[in-house]
Length: 279
Image 1 (cartoon, one colour):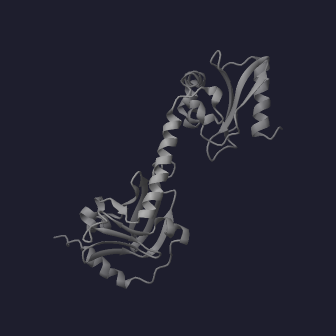
Image 2 (spheres, one colour):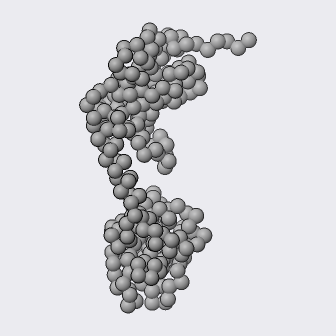
């Protein structure tokens, strides 16, 4: 018969066999995310989460689970798929290779946390592992609620249609449906590459220039974290919704939109100017 899993108290007792904590949260991290969280801050008997300088504690009544080893803050916990309201992951070891992770978020009510971790930890937490722990600091909640409202408004504005002529960064061009229809059609199979359709990588400000006798919107952008090997320049004529461009991918240049020779030469010049420092 399999041995029964220990409860919160058993894990807490086991911590007495561990050496002293080896890492602490930096003061700025502790100031932003430390303190008391609870499922219901108004009820003393409610499940609680304490984020301290050198430990994470989850408790209910006289039961407590603590993680003290290798406490660290992980800002890139979700990699490139970070949820919009995620702030930080605080991770520590309950026992070697047995971790507890506190995921901190913000919303329009303020700051809150959820728990993840090793299956053994989650099994011992039971229903607590599914709980939402709200920050119990009024000041923290007011600050984070205000920031959440600002972020939500920014996302709303980003979804609002806007003509390409008003865009200052290539990522804003996606708000012009006429442009995006023309751009996707011009890209053809390259439209499967999200960096080309989102255009949200590093980029200079959009300009408007006369090239080969016509007025064009000129945009240059690159793939996030890989500008040297993946970048592009595009030209857009809003009156005709015509798009021309040059896409550079890992050593290969591709002209798109079938530009005439004079315009192809301008694209080469603009590409070298932006991505090869004028050479």
